[in-house]
Image 1 (cartoon, rainbow, N blue to C red):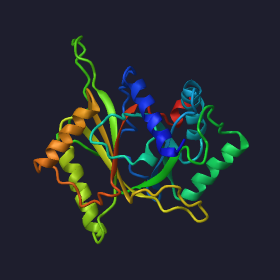
Image 2: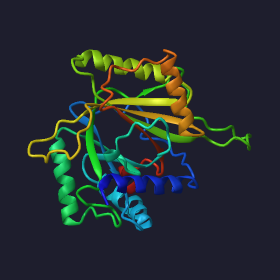
Image 3: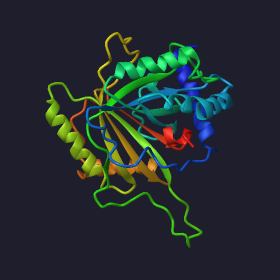
Image 4: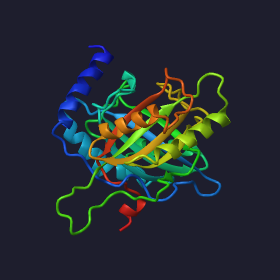
Length: 293
């Protein structure tokens, strides 16, 4: 069975699961601007993965109740949150080799990315950070990459916060919380300064739309000396959007409509490499404080 057909089967099975799965309403990430402390860099290390066939319970249990805490306790690993793919969003802009059903975003901070990575490998090799039962550790299983913060987390210009119904309102449910990952690469010949300015302008425009609550911009991190070459090529830039709504398709449709109407101007990105995907929260954001009490 070739890799593309396997991915198709996973996507079909996941879509069937999501048809009956409850959506989650966890807050997304830590509050504030999420800028690094002076003299340090801040990173997001993202791992997209799938469980081995028939091992979904072990995978989720081990990830949630063991592995997240094992790594968050390491120096420089400042937080983590898990998400599940929302696969049915159209139009689809995710290349097949990048499609996985689960995502974890690790927050990292330090002055040496190589040390962050080597210390985690040592913790795993020594048994301090335990492997996840049911995780597909094969060479063509998980997809991972690290991006570095290039701008502060930006919130809505109108100051609106995530919606919580009034205490006296017993009829209105809270909206679901989603993130959208936008991977973009400037078109050939585009200047870095101009592209980053256009990306910042797009963030400002989109955050005026209903349901788009916050965003942060990232640049692909430079691999530390001696690091193994990446298995897949990621784009130079990433935007993580924090959103809320009754469903992700409605948010996607609003963004597409605003772009067509000229309300939002997308930067000059290479359409051959651009990708986007929607994910729903399936865990709270955790940090070291969760293990110190």
